Amino acid sequence: MTLVIFLGSLLGSMALGIPIAFALLLVSVALMLHLDMFDAQIVAQNLLNGADSFPLMAVPFFMLAGEIMNAGGLSKRIVNIAMALVGHKRGGLGYVAIIASCLLASLSGSAVADAAALAALLVPMMVLAGHNRARSAGLIAAGGIIAPIIPPSIGFIVFGVASGVSISKLFLAGIVPGLMLGVALAVAWWFISRSENVETPPKRSRAEVLRALIEGSWALGLPLIIIFGLKFGIFTPTEAAVVAAVYSLFVSLVIYRELKVSQLYEVILSAAKTTSVVMLLVAAAMVSSWLVTIADLPGQLAAVLEPFMDNPTLLLLVIMLLIILVGTVMDMTPTILILTPVLMPAITQAGIDPVYFGVLFLINTAIGLITPPVGTVLNVVSGVSKLKIEEIVGGVWPFLLAQLTVLFLLVLFPQLVLGPLKFFTG
Image (cartoon, rainbow, N blue to C red):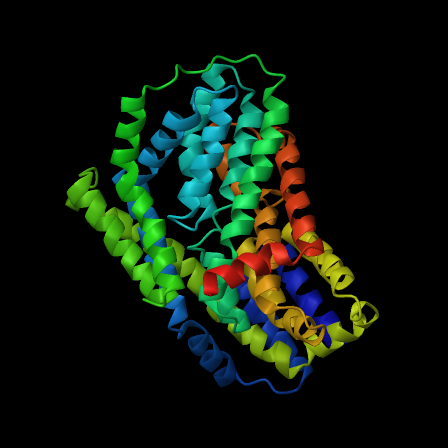
């Protein structure tokens, strides 16, 4: 009965169009009334405690770093590096989009920001060269969801806070799977681009390639600093976020000089607005998470999943299917915040590595960003490229299948995640 009330109040609130943060608070109130323990003070206290977290301080700083990078020219130089390296090859602009997606992912950690920036830069160029507009937009949308997997990742921060799993280990474990998503996109694009007759830009000279690498070296330095610092314990993920914001601000103001001091107010305001949405979601989710624990919903779910507990691979496949279904109707952050406290006890009971599960969970929820009808990244790319959402859905499906294949391989072969994690953590 408790599970029915939880799902009924949540889905009912969403059906009425109530913002997800307030829907979570309504779910909490419904559970408290069902348990005959309603107390407004408990709601307020857990709401404040939910946002009062040192690891969560990384969110506003990574958000700020991403805004500064887009406004300060770092993103543009990343695209220029990829263009200099592979832009002249057959289907080269598609490979540029994929490489740029992976590089930008290591800078911002935001799928929406990366997809919007690349769609604005590359979709017109790809269409002008003769590529199908819907397919080009679909590729860039699929490339955008690599951002939550390769560190720094805001999704991993939220998952780490909700589950109690080491954020540093999550960051390091996401590197190889994130690159695998990029390789899968490249393979899919290779098959698609063979049938297209497009013009390719002329090959850059060695001097031009070297110039692009030198100009973009400051942008490329940031992910190296973050990974090096996390691997050797120089700073925590929260401190890494501060380093990223300060570094990107210095490069944008002093080195590239594309960001003016007068623009800082708008940049900070934009980052603050995005951060406020995430933080309110996290705070509201912590209220419902506390009540989920009190109501023993994880225990009830574990009873449902009991037949699969002896086979971790089968259990993961069932859970991944559940998350895929949820991801079609819910955005990434709410999915993480709602499902993590419910699923983690079952994962622990089955003896599955929580860091490994976190990587699979994040990839799955990231894929949800390009699945209709919600598909946040699809909607962003649709607006930027001026395409109808159904056209982009038609263009994204080959790349969606490629990324689902990677997810399936990671479920079957855990060492693809755990092996590199062991290497990075020593």
